[in-house]
Image 1 (tube, rainbow, N blue to C red):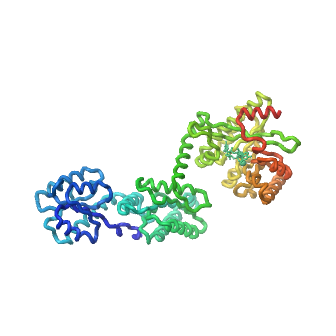
Image 2: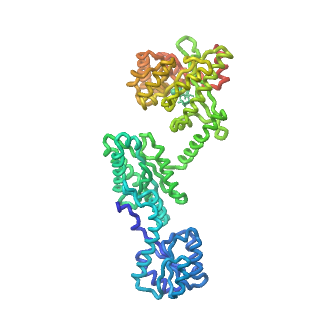
Image 3: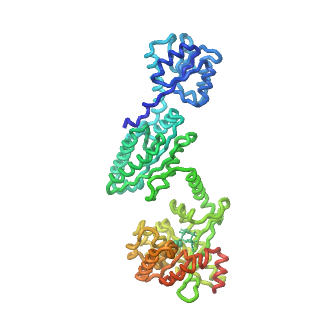
Length: 561
Ligand code: C2E
Ligand code: CA
Ligand code: CA
């Protein structure tokens, strides 16, 4: 554990302010073996050196009588300076009376002139530096009791310290985060969770011990590492990741790694780790990548996404979201006929322009905001269906997208029923599209909700079928009415035979379940005729129509009778 201490190995810097050359030489000889020593010949020179920011000094040895600016004046200036005042000053003097005045002005100790034995001077300097460093560090509890790593406060203090000693060295900030730690705690108990944290800390120590890295447990299951930049850093982190995975047996622990390489030292220490954490969080739920790097684009993207999140409520209130309708055609007869439509949302943001749903839907799904938006879309869709009935005598069912988050909302059914009542609609008027990925998450809840909705009379479409996890095993238990084949099968239809085989398979499943298949993403005649030959009867895609605004869609329906 002590390998992680960084106090050894870094040479502190002492500033000697003394006008007599012989004295500078003596002090240089005494201190040189242990410290970096800088010299100034008078107060003015020292003041310049202290302020040019190139070096951070751990101690100042100050003569009193000097030309241009004497020691008294310099001491006063230092103690009035917000940054410099924390550097301890030892005054070198032969006059007893001067001592009192210097103490009043903030000096911490004295060295008598002519000089004592070298050991005495060295001991005084060492003790003062130690005392002062401890003072600033001890106020934060030094170590995390569970893992023995530094506490976060202490760690950040050391990061600042390291920066002052490694001024020109590029440094890396690394964040390690255990995926699903809360779940592990719940499933295996807190004790096992604690063990896992200690084990991870141990791995970090073992891997990085030969470097001058420092590490801490920042909070819960998040670890910070600060080290000199090297490509090896990331390899070591990956080793930890692998070892943790193989050592954790049934837990199958995944460690996310985020790295901010060659940190910008002008930004504060905590922000550097925020950046590494930002990269790290990108890996949440993504099993294809092991490591994520912070970049300016990532930062820009995350600012953009924050913006979208903070603007959604206002956007809904100001009607910036519009619903468009994409027709689904029945191609079983000679002439294709509009059978129904899918409601899709668009965001016309006053500053950011038109934003496609792929930019904001996954974002809002992650934090639950999607419910509000879905509700808004459903309301608009319901009102539109009503208007088509009233104004044109057209009855056209509309599918709406139902997100995972909606499934977990116990008021879902109630909300939809109220919506129907308010618009004098029937369960035939609205179809519910549930994406396949929702099926794998909490099967029990999903079966419960869809069964209940179906008992009410709603039709359920399984969206993006075949896109993600296989839900074949669930099809038995899960009541569905329509399969919506994922677009990628259609897009690959003409390119590879495998897709054709898969479409045939999906058609077989549909026949077995006695449900129709909707093919979406159909863009050309070739795709259309092949799908028709394969037995697909409902088509949605640019070939027939893009998603249309209310007026255009209405006109299309009126025209097609
Ligand atoms: P989705 O539910 O699979 O919707 C179909 C997407 O395919 C739509 O993209 C549609 O515009 C696009 N599309 C239709 N025909 C073609 C075609 O021929 N070629 C190609 N390349 N694309 C076609 P869109 O509108 O960008 O929506 C993307 C996704 O965003 C939707 O995928 C859905 O998952 C989500 N989404 C859209 N609106 C809503 C909404 O109101 N609520 C929720 N929860 N999700 C929505
Ligand atoms: Ca859909
Ligand atoms: Ca789809």
